[in-house]
Length: 342
Image (cartoon, rainbow, N blue to C red):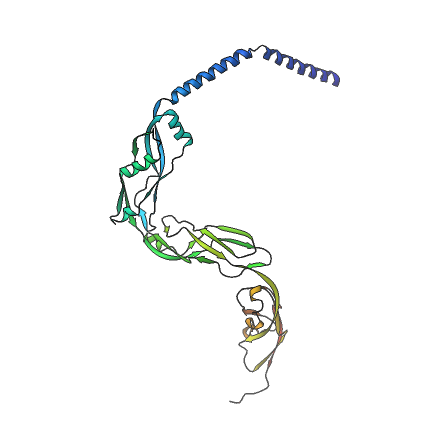
C-alpha cells in the first residue's frame, strides 16, 4: 500500500515538470525580448526629450536667524523655510529635487537689533541675494516667499541659577566619587517671562549615565532645555572626581552624653571598631579623634535590660562606613559614694 502511494506521488511530480517545460517552450521569448527592448528605448528617448524642456518648480530652503541674544524672544513664529519658485530645464530641476541639497539661508540679526525698536525687517534684496547664491547660473528665480519679513520681538527677564547634575555614575570596584561634582561655570544666566523665572531654582544637565569609572572624568554636557526659557550658553564643563579607596578599621572609645556627675558608668565593651572605606589620599590623615561614638544617658534611665544602643555622631568627610561593631553595649550604672561639699 505504501509503495503504491509513493509511486503515485512520483508520477504526479514528473507530470508537473513535463507540463511546465511544455508551457515555457510554447512562449516566443525572442519576440518578447525584442518588444521589451524597443519599449525601453522609446521610454529613454521620451525621458531625454522631456528633461530638455523648461519647467517651473517650488524649492524649499531652510531659513536660520543667527546670533540671536538669549534675552530676545520672538513675538511671532519665524518661518522655517523660504519657498522659491524657479525655472530651468528638467534635468537641472531634477538635480535640485533629487540630488542637490541647498545650504540654509543664514542671516545675522545682531545688526538689525541695534535700533531697539522691538522689531526688525528682513529686506527682500537680502533674501533674494542669498537665494541666488544657491542657484546655478542657468536657473531663473521667478518669485519667493516670504519677503520683506517683519519680525516683532521682546526682551525677557533674567537671573543666575546654579547648575545641577542629572545622571548616574557607576564606579568600578575599589573606586569612589571623592568630592562634589564641579561645574564650569557653576551658574548660568537664564531668560524667561517673570512668571516662569520665579519658579526656576536650578538648571539640570541632560540625563547622563557613565559606567565602569576608575578615574576623574572631565567632559562637556548639554543643559536640559525648558520650554519658554533660554540660556546664555547651551552646555557646561563637568568634572567628576573619582579616586581609589581602601578599607581600614579604627577603634573609637564610647562616651556618654548627659551623664550626671554622681553616677559611674561601666560599659562592656567601652569602645567600638569601625570599618570604613577611606580614599587613598586621606588614609594617613584620618585618626580616631575624627570619630565620636556616644551613648545617651536618656537611654540608660529606667533601662532594666542592661543593654543600650550606641550612635556614631561624628565622622570625617570622604569616607564610607561599612560596619560598626558592636551596635549596642552592656552597661552597669552605679551611684558614686563620694559626696561633693557645697
